[in-house]
Image (spheres, rainbow, N blue to C red):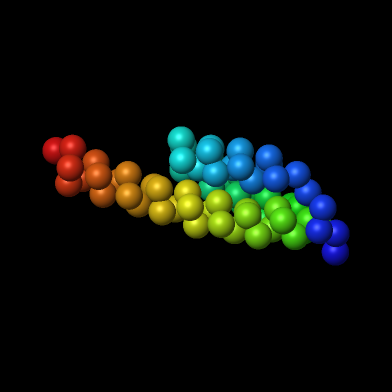
Length: 68
């Protein structure tokens, strides 16, 4: 396995997941499932998926309880 990869790609994924969790989820899944040869992308792809799910749940709870 190659361990090469550009760190900018995961950073962009985290920013996208923060702005739009659904698009971040897709972005993380693309990194995780299609970039299997680059360990950096697989690891951060999984974390981007977790992060986008967390952001989605927190924003949903905020809309439900805080912004009535």
